[in-house]
Image 1: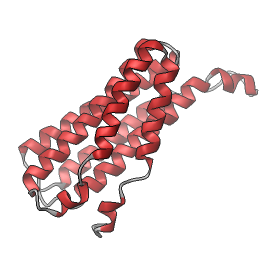
Image 2: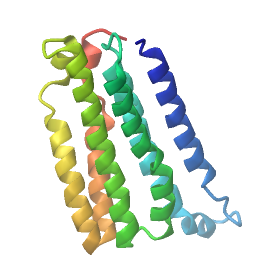
Image 3: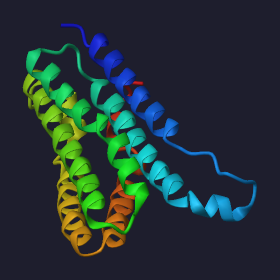
Image 4: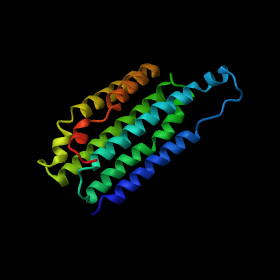
Length: 191
């Protein structure tokens, strides 16, 4: 099967997730700095989630570049990833209510953890189709960054049960880890 529909649908889901998040932003009830500080948690949670969705979009684009075709397993793995990404607007809005509250921050982390796990499964499904000696396998390498991320998400979820802000700091650290895309795929010259 051609990969174009998978890419187009994925781009659409990402665009809708970002649109829903921006629509949740509330306009301040005045023009002073105090009004901005009142919505700061909403703005900061939006920023962090926008960065996360952007990271997934960029890495999904890079992941799909060397792929020639897709199969049913890849389609389902991609839908699994999109399911978790589609929950980001919900957990973003919930965290913005009280960023220090444990339950929303822990659930936010669970969505991030499951998104990471789903992306890893999508990569494995693509490798199964493309082959262990493919250019995709060469570009993906050993997956150490993914393993570190999953460990940090679990740590952050546990920390957030104690203190929501501590968990959020770890989520920011993971975003920083992934903010710069992996150059191995770009260096293979697919773009």
